[in-house]
Length: 274
Image (cartoon, rainbow, N blue to C red; front, side, top):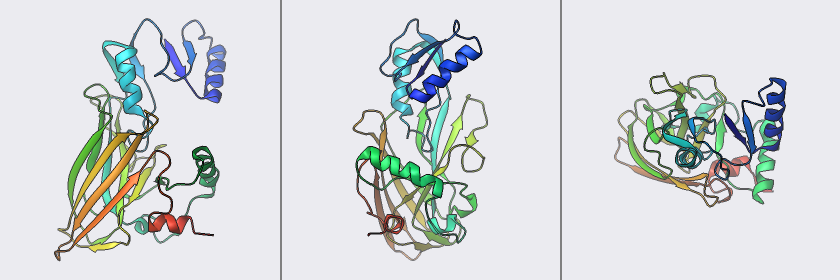
């Protein structure tokens, strides 16, 4: 068995665990990125946990695609089997049940570390803990699919249509992970189950739009690999057609790092000018 770990603290802990459980003769522990290491013989099974709150956000498509080509025998199996990103229209304020929209205290240190790493602030993806499914204004739809044991595509473009099923306000979409460890498993649903994954909110409109049942949201969700060759950038565009005949158009670019700062009203609220 071969284990690969790139994070220094995790590598040290893994090495200590191998000693503690007397597994040094059974597991070869390699330090580095799996896309940059080589070993032989090839494996029959690859087990990985690099699936993000958006299915591809942590680079799973590129990393596991490389693992399938270089580290697995033909017909080798990847676990998890499949991951998808679901999306549905929401209003951000309604996700918070009238509580203020703000970063948690625990998130601020992490946020500063991201900005320090990037070299400047940018509009980070908004991670929503414990979002309520009751805030969704339509049935959800799949906007991204990673089939780790089939046709695994790093770049994707999906256009979907969602019909509004109850009256409310829309200013963006909520996205979340569904994950199958094995083909016949009931999928893990990060919106409806307690997991370590959260939902991601993407703002699309400058102000909330009131909608009634029968309105239609057409959403295009584009995934492209970013400049580091591993992590994806996302581009969203949509057209909301209300039942009174009006159209509202929104777009958002969400890069893995960098990009605009305070480009949408919600970011100007979260990062007020000094």
